[in-house]
Image (cartoon, rainbow over all chains, first blue to last red; front, side, top):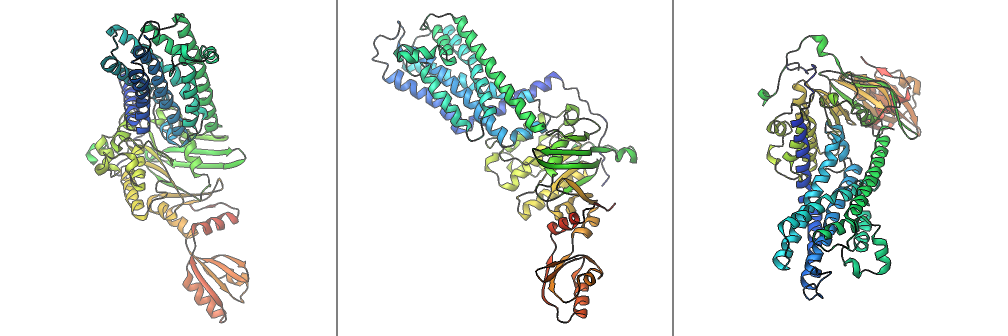
Length: 273
Length: 315
């Protein structure tokens, strides 16, 4: 049996940057493929925002009363349903998968391997951002081709960039949920947060049509601030300071990352306790 | 396929027998449950060790400690002389763990490609697929595989980085006989390439088929240790049950008898071989009746080994 011996010489442990980048790239690529093939995720993430846009924007919005603040409803709803889509892609792309992989042992298999732990989380964020970009681009495509929306290429690019960056706070929120929810309860908990938050932030019904009490709540909600940033790109914002919107979103991101970190530590302690 | 694998001549016998992984007086508890109570275990380079024990014996805990997935309450855990959490140690180990759910939408080759990328000098993808017998199903999604195929994929994830030391936690649990034997073959090939393997199992047959050394563990304590042949002597044998007027002490003194117990008016005898005992019993007691003979299971062996309250070391 001793035809080959175990090599006990210390192997070259220096992990060059190129190899580290390869790991991150592969982790993200396979995370994307994994989710793309998960019909429940891929379809609902892309389908629902588009369906709402077709229904409320293209079908019912045609005969709208001259639009909102000079902006047609079909144009106005691209940033709001875009925000809705980004939120969905980010929350479900992180919370449910993390909760299930954490609760059902897969994360342990990965942690036992030499995978850099940060690559795992980065992959989930990158994947969510790619799906976010797909949703926003499809909304723009529908708006321009079927909704008669006119938007300068630079504005379109700014809109996509704003919304894709806006995936970060909701990825952070999803990681926090994923660390505190169980594998089976995570999707339900995510929905319980996602849907009311979307409604109250004016993502389904434009802000000014919301009941007064909801409008008063909205200004405290992160999706409201992301949608206002996106709306300001197409000239339909409420004229509030964009700096404030960014500050709220960054603060919210840090808060969620802090919660996710507590969850991560709690898991490690359980593991190592 | 062997040509792809780097072979290194044995430097010397001492080098070859270096300790790859070690537990020294390790204790670990989960809440009030003591999973391990002061366990000492050495796994030497090139050796295949089976950690054999019933469910809840502490086998998985020992593997988790050695993988750095859990921290010992007391004692010392070292792998290649270092901390299992050290990335330099991690790239030299591979693990096959029990997992409830593996991402089902990725294909077999994709799973292996990703895990290979974590290691500095992985096997070529084709070699990993071949080593686990997965060539023909490499493009299937994990969710479409049978139980045996799923275990082989997890096995491939353990070996794809070409690590020196592999941990296989219950590699064949839940598999049918054929799938189990297929996986045994794959494990044997790995051992033939000079890898160090620690596997856990609750099948004596499996430990016997694969290991150079068997460590029997029960209730967090090592109760026996030795070569498969040595362990089998202690754990194999027959269980004979009969109603007889012979006294317990008399039966206990007969050759080959390990243990005698009185049970509901009958005697339960554990013996190495049934036939000589039966001749003897029938010669001494012509009215002997209610005779039953069965193969002593591992559970009996554990009971016997632990009831004595002493550790039997056969090497």
